[in-house]
Length: 269
Image (cartoon, rainbow, N blue to C red; front, side):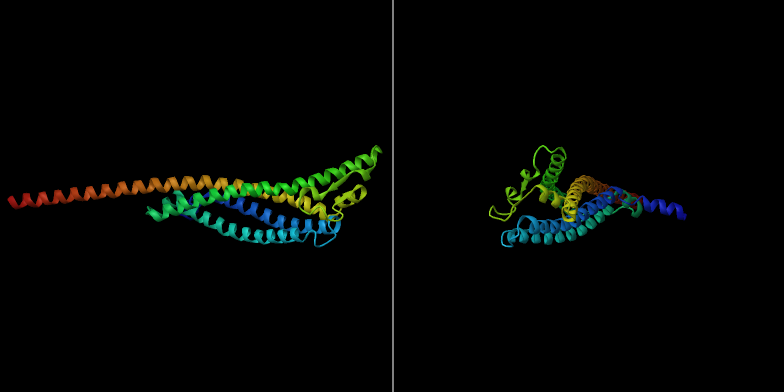
């Protein structure tokens, strides 16, 4: 076999579906974890500088955000390992591996592990749907603040309504208590907040983090389809293996009967 034919055969053993799902999963988790971590830091900075000047008012929120950042570290580490495991499982169960390395034996333990991956991926997919919905909440909040700033600019241009009458009260979202000072921003102060680097970066990073969560959901759905197909393949392979074992046993018994018959016939003659 030449080098070209060998390369073509090796490329045929790559589970491209699992590879695409792994890349999409890594990209989505990286965007969600990286952008979400930086956006949460910027959110705390905005609250401390403009909406809650007393540290005790947002102490609980700061602790929750810090805990979420640690959870992000764990999510990134877990999905890096889990994606590699699913990619390895795809290499094992692809039909191209069977063509490269010949027949392989499927055990009950291997089928059980594949079924476990299907169940675990399903649970993770449902969990990430919740994460995707949760990540849309800060995008909605920042969008409301940004749209209010745009309204202030338009009113200032048309000179119809004073901009000081237009406010954003963060306390209504429940992230800081009602006794927080000042708790809200109005008019030019709110417009200046929207023009700060912290607000601009946090808003766009939350959007990217939400998109990363959506990409992770799509990747897990892709993985679920792949794993279900691989599990069905292993199940059919085990049935075929059992059939071949029975067939081989029957052929061996038939050969034994024929050999004994020939021996008896030779003894009579």
